[in-house]
Image (cartoon, rainbow, N blue to C red):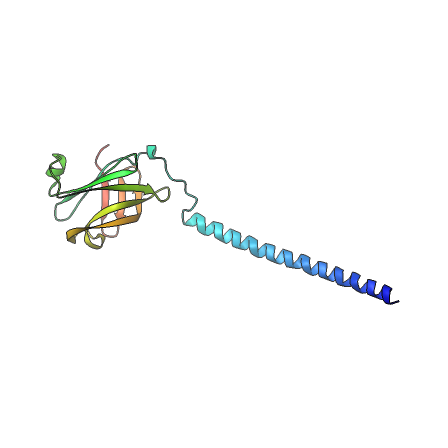
Length: 168
């Protein structure tokens, strides 16, 4: 009798345990699915899956920004992921390619399809505010810069620090 009773008990216990195991698996599969959907949504909204644009899409070129005080800042973006940056006293100096007040060069990269990063950037204005020119430019790295193809690069649209393409 003991053997038969023990057998029945283990059969019932195994069956209940199997049902609990199935419920456990279903519950956590739903939770895992919800977590996966949440992560994909976050990554897509942050631009994680944006493929970097190929250089031949047209970012290379010369862009300029005119400060309220009259200086002209020029950046020349090249296909080899380098750039040059110059600041001229007046627009006529930039056109004549005369000696700039400031000359700098560095590298740039695509952070996402339309966001750029500039390494070794020389900040000529304070707090990215073009009306506040620094006494001495400050070396920095800039990220999250928006490329608006094909004619604009938005450093800080809140302050109007936006470069316009000058070569067409």
